[in-house]
Image (cartoon, rainbow, N blue to C red):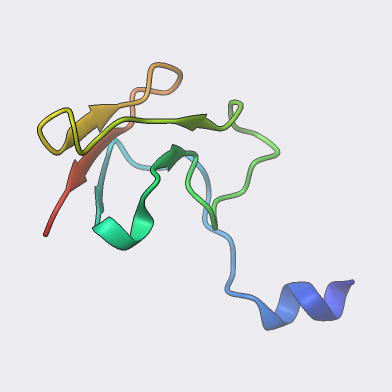
Length: 69
């Protein structure tokens, strides 16, 4: 299993920043995002961003997501 981990992209800490820019390829948007470590974070929640003017804030951690085209 360690060989699978080393072949994949390294995970980044979840909720390490207050603002994240996302693109349409990141949709559906979830916090924490795929590629973030989950062991020390909150449960994954899906955030509406397209219908909310291109911005959304996670109720758990306060991370603010901005959709850039």
